[in-house]
Every structure is written in structure tokens, then in C-alpha cells.
Image (tube, rainbow, N blue to C red; front, side):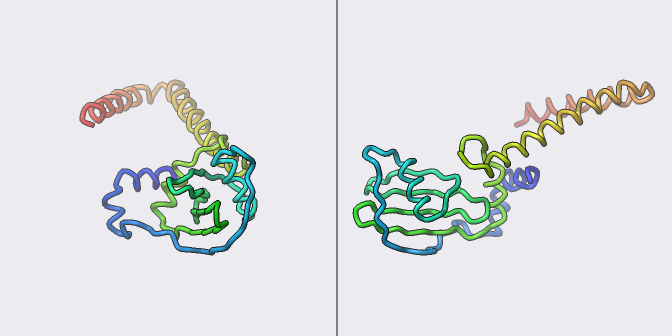
Length: 174
């Protein structure tokens, strides 16, 4: 997933040529619902109450527009939603962004865990941590095995020097 998402992000112009430039949100539902907020509640607290009223709890961000509307972006890897709530009229508009593979991969790549209060977010973050730990153990065990097999040391040192040289070349040219 990280390899594919990195290819998508590094070659954004080429990948984007296969998809429309902007993916509009499609209205999923509109309704009127009065939701009372505690005085001086932050947009995040208000967003949490709106999502609870809609039974759409999960990772989100919320902000107030200049017009006073509450805009909630409900993070979801496959179908992200934008919920707009007009406090005065109680008008709620729920919009969904259609699925597109490149946007899905980028959302999964950029997901962060442990900041949200939801188990699924923590499971994703834990799985990423486990993959990183596995790769570190894999690298160190490979280096240890290389050192223990005396017949491969010359080839190993040659590859190591070549790898550092290639890394330095790319670092200087970027």
C-alpha cells in the first residue's frame, strides 16, 4: 500500500491524467435537524455532536466558515463525507466523495493514528508501527547473517559501498 501510494504521489501529474481534475462531492442527503450545542463549544465539539446525531461517529475535522456554517470532514478511506450544518436553520447536507483509487491510496498513506479517539484509527497506526518494526528487525538480521557468512563479506561490502554511493548521488541531484 505504501509503495503504490508513493508511486501515485510521486507521479501525481501522470496518474491524474487518467482521472478528472476535481472529484466533486455528491449530495447523499439533506435534512433539517436542530442540534443544541453547549455554550462556547469548539467546532470540534460541535462536529462530534453532529456526527453522533447522524450515527456517523469516526475520525473527522471540523471548522466554521465565514458565513457561520459548520463544515465537518468525516475521514473515511473509501467514502469520505462532507457534512455542512447551518446552525440557524438546522439544515444539514451530507455529501460523499466518489471512490477513486489514487485518492484512496493517498488517504491511506497520510492517515495518522493515535490522535483520534477511535479504535480503527489506533489499529491502523499499530499495524504501521508493526510493519516498521518488522523492517528494522529484517534489516538488522540480514546484516548479522551477512557478517556471519564470511564468504559473502566482500560482495556485501561492495554492495554497501555502491548503495551509499547511489544514495549520495540521488541526495545531491535532488
